[in-house]
Length: 133
Image (cartoon, rainbow, N blue to C red; front, side):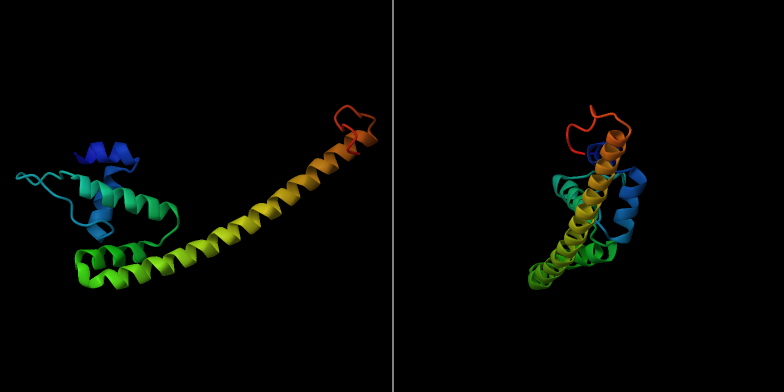
């Protein structure tokens, strides 16, 4: 696949794909004899993995380290696993923080809904209150 096709498929700009490759966020992409990037299925797998992990909030540094370890081969399996375990732990913490924030927002919204309902009721508009006043 060309860089334009990969860019469209994964909704990532061609510049971002080049940047990811340059900094080691994805392994070097296969190239044609003329030097044009020719993304293989494996290359696309790395792009998809990177996009997914970045979307989940994993740091660029952690992903670069993971890619570097993966390129070193089987001798780094344990290190890669540990890195992923640590990133999972950090992600779980962020999810819990976000869940707490979501609950707080829900409570705030409920208070505003109650306030609007009570205000409508005090103004004599009982149709919008549906007995919640």
